Image (tube, rainbow, N blue to C red):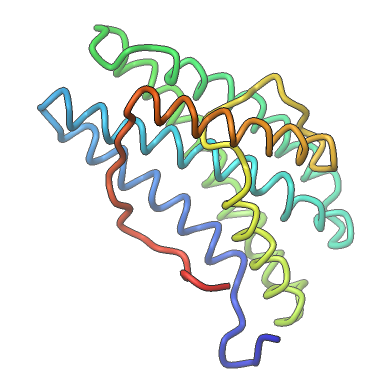
Length: 197
């Protein structure tokens, strides 16, 4: 059981993901070596995919109780659009001339949504949740990050319920196989979630 001194804040954990995508994209734009760009792009795709699905199967399920049910539906629609763009980036080789633009569209959509969350939704969540509720949702979000797919699956269920969780487990296994077979490599993230939650 968490004590007051080690309560987690879901809004902080969400912002860590947003900040990692911002940092990774800056690193991608600064990279000149194709291998470096590929490794950073792999990490960007993974982080955007994991973040969206983790929010859908955890945080957004609590939005209704906070009076944000319509906001959750709006967010899921934006996530569906973002996933299609991230999928396009995942399906395009970094060596292709159009890749920078394909990735930029995905990251721009993700960061536009992230700013909306940070400016409008996260302050409301902090205001409405008790420290105990906030901690519980934060831990559910962090746990979800370990079980959702690591690549975009825009045609999978996005209900936040059992269908999405079941598809997510299957997708996560598939993604691990694909990443292993392809030998995908990833860069370290600048911002870290707690290792134990």
